[in-house]
Length: 339
Image 1 (cartoon, helix red, strand yellow):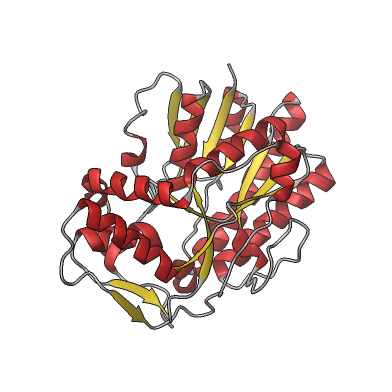
Image 2: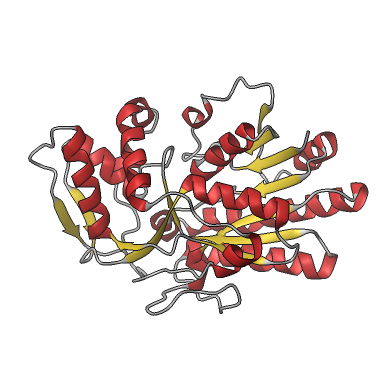
């Protein structure tokens, strides 16, 4: 049975990936340093599985990471450990440099020693569409120039370049993936969709930056995780793959969809109305990915329509209100990223 290691597996995408891997009968080791966005609620459904193990560790702790790799001898490492919230990167860029750049560097050094010793394993480095910057027309391809706008995007772009350099210089078996905006169960409510769901459930206004017309490509988290497993199994080492749905929506459209779903499931309070607030500094207008390479080369495509996915997402949060209680209120309600 194959063993896989997931870094950042207490977070949103990481925990959903761990769940899917376990469903597919992999043995999964979850490494997470336990930050504000880590949540054991995310793993409660499978934490007692004999095929699952959690280890607390910061990627920068090279001695411990090496020890874990040598003991477990994983067939694959999915690197999802990262600081991801743009607003927080405006307030505290150093945390993003430490986690996203230095953490990736440390993991690469450990993986290099492990691979040279055992000649096994593959690294899947999970990145973001934000590295391509503002895409006003068309859709970003894998060989397009990186133009990151925020400290977060710049830190992820830097980590991608590090991985690329280790592939070329040290001949490491690694693959980079760049995905569009994810949504689904277990996402921290600092992000748009769970934040809006929380506010709808709790009779609060729905704050949108600027005019609410910033556009993002949205993919259901399970579709992203399915693509990652497909890339691990069939992807070509040294390649980069975009992962997207080809479905763009602006923030007003997101809120309207959520309100329509909410009306069918709960009584909406009088305070639940869209409220436009001061825009985020350096806010990109649009992200959009060209995912044809993944679709054509690996025969992958997303399975979940946006309407089906957003309905599943709303109902998960509605049926898991304890999830919100597991998070500090200031991390839900406090506005970050102001200058």
